[in-house]
Image 1 (cartoon, rainbow, N blue to C red):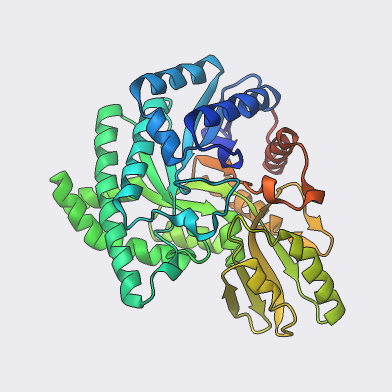
Image 2 (cartoon, rainbow, N blue to C red):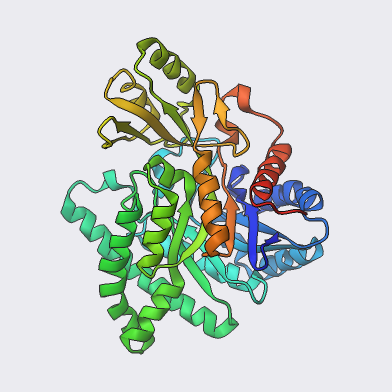
Length: 406
């Protein structure tokens, strides 16, 4: 839905199980149509669409894509952003680090992402910019040495150059500005603001611009402008909160570097302040244990008294460190509902969302806002509730925070 004049708010449909296009369309019919009537009865309602590789191959067929385009118009719906991070199955099986596979060192990732943009260029309404969010290159533990990491960055840069050239061509054909939104995540090759900015400046704006100029047959200044337009940041609030990064400082640093922010993913991490009492820490461990599930990675960062941050690959690893008296807070990459602030002794990083939205209202640095809580199926039983109602509650919480009326 359109908010604040020229921005758009929705939720990401990666919360719905189903990898095939028929399954994906059924979930849109089941959830988006009734949600639009409740949240946005008098204006079009935007969709944050998640397409698996399988779904994208089916939807890219001209007849199927035309049918979907017509379906959107019939129901007063539109798509302005696509989640292109998870390539394959994302529900009902172990995902963990495979969410990064295939990564940006592979031709499969490039082909998939190009296909998503081809789809988006067709269905995106005129006058809107469109984005596809993507993985932070790869999972860093798959690359054993610094040389391996540097090679991965270099290959990813060249593939993103090829994608940027494709987006320049799509803009020439359609008049629509499209951008790849790179999403830093804990334990990704790009896992925080410094890593993202360094990659952008040291790779994309160096060798990347030179290569793009060759592909475009342009000068480097034109290629640089194209890179800045077509490759941007996806600011996932949960991910930066797990890194203990200040939203204001991250946003300022990215914008000061001249890089654009293509999308805010509005999401909350789970955190646990760790008081000195051993008995309380044990109680916190017991409350965190139900979140230690087997489907997704729930990376952990723990802050010490001196301010240093220690990282652990998954929640089980963090639970084993709770007794360490030097740690004063644990944060884990578990997307929890936006409308709940406290879970017994546990908390959500909701203050980071409020700060991010406040900065956004002041600066208007992106037109895309997307709620992303994909963990409904794996929440502890006590926190599960009707999904349709939960999506509506999250939308209304964001609208209330932004003081937006229907």
